Amino acid sequence: MESYYRYSVSAFILLYLCVFTIPVVFLNFDHFNPFMNFSNSTLESPGPKFELQRLIVSTSDQIRAVGTSGSTYDHQQLNRNTTLIRETKKLSKEQMLEQGLARARASIRSAAIARIVRTTSFMNDNDVLVGDVYRNPSTFYQSYVEMERRFKVYVYTEGELPIVHDGPCKNIYTIEGRFIHEMEHGAKRFRTNDPQRAHVYFMPFSVAWMVKYIYTPLSFDITPLKHFVSDYVKVISTKYPFWNRTHGADHFMLACHDWGPHASQGNSLLYNNSIRVLCNANISEGFNPQKDVSLPEISLIGGYLSPKLIHPPPPNASRPYFAFFAGGLHGPIRPYLLQHWKGRDNDMQVYEYLPKNKDYYSYMLESKFCLCPSGYEVASPRIVEAIYSGCVPVILSDNYVLPFSDVLRWEAFSVQVETTKIPRLKEILSAIPEEKYRKLQEGVIVVRRHFMLNQPPKRFDVFHMILHSIWVRRINARPNSNRS
Image (cartoon, rainbow, N blue to C red; front, side):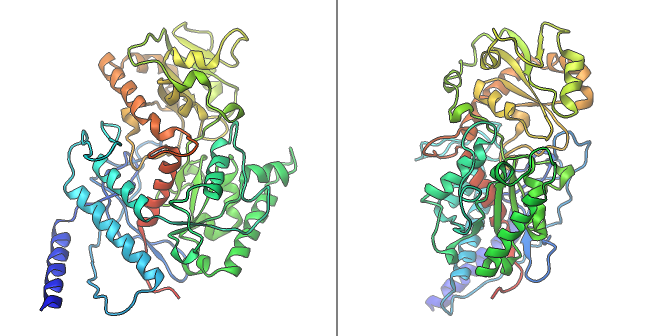
């Protein structure tokens, strides 16, 4: 009788979910949606495949890369087939992992069903997610809690210093080294030494250090980087069963160097199947937001945040400069920006290089808008520097998928201007009403916590946001068939 009762309750819950399920947590591409939607799209690889489950709310709320003209990603409709499983035998570790992920999905789906408006606050918790900057704060919060409860990462021990298990922890590629170091020496909550208990597997090589140690300067030959990645995958796939059973779909690499995407071409399965966490998140160069993660580029001179940025001025502080940019002529967008605005308008403080008596961060702290054009590649550290400064970022880029777009509404704390409209930049920014500008600036202050590098890491900071992005992609991937 007790068994029959449990079965009946389970069947009722199943019926409820099949009829009333609302999409829960992953990404689309115009605006990222707050819920997850589970579809039948699969990774194209031989043998065992993974089913990617999309997080979509509606066709009117889709995420697209910055600078694309209306193109969005098609997502197949959900096939809500749910299997009722009786636990009649002891589960393997792998089955237990998948069962835990299924429970996490159900929990997140429930948060989506019972979601409250974006001003939701969470009781009995010091961390409050409030405001229009979040696509769905309740769903994001529940997903984050499930990540803290369950997510385990195995870090491969293979490879030698300095290219593996190390990375740059200061200057332009700070985020690459800091993440590797935290996974190697911290992250006790998330790291497991038992690969059988891992949800994902981290390959801790540094592309920035490959460039430093095995690339021949000025040769523009990145073949050695591809060979290194190819050899590394060969080692771990020969020694362990995990790569081969999913064709790399539950493995990830992380790189902030511009050549990260090119290095990943050293293994076709890594390039096509694995989660690639990249600063160079350019959809025109193979970045796939359905499985890849956009990494914010953070540059800390000397490895430390400038004291001027630790406590930015309050929202009502005077900002005498309308817009500001200073930087070298890298790539095609910056020359175009300087051609139209350098020295042409006192409201548009645009420089190639600042005079010696001018201070870069002081300008950011005193500017309403901080112009963030791409350089050679799409990402720019100026975006995060603007957020640190309380300055509204103006994104000038093509084909760039912005970081954490699965949970953050960038339109609520930044301005995105098509690069072809740079000649009209002042006109576009001047047309923003003061009330809307204040809301954008308030949004910048709210999201600042999500881009902070803390030592040790804190809840919802950039380290945890990166992990959450990886978690979302893993929780939306389930094996289609039994794996040996």
